[in-house]
Length: 125
Image 1 (cartoon, rainbow, N blue to C red):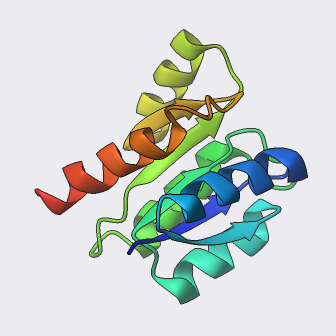
Image 2 (spheres, rainbow, N blue to C red):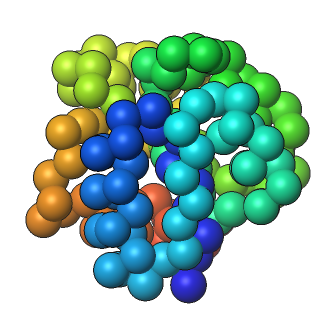
């Protein structure tokens, strides 16, 4: 069972992600803004972090950069979780140093398997 932190300010999206991930057997902590999310990640030592790139308090680039500095030794995957168009999302995620992208709205049929694929990829490294 993996611990996943979801940093997402849209309550409906956060709760849906939480529900789907719990159903898939994961423990989930939701943080509604970047400041809380960073604190949770640093204290909880998750196996994966989903980071909304469009948070109201701290932009996604800053969150990813700060978390990469703080958790570099643990190599926790930081996955961009964004409603930007797919091409834009991939370009931004690569520039920000994210380990992958999941776009919103959530596809309820594939979301958990997308997250699991990132977890499997990390466990092979």
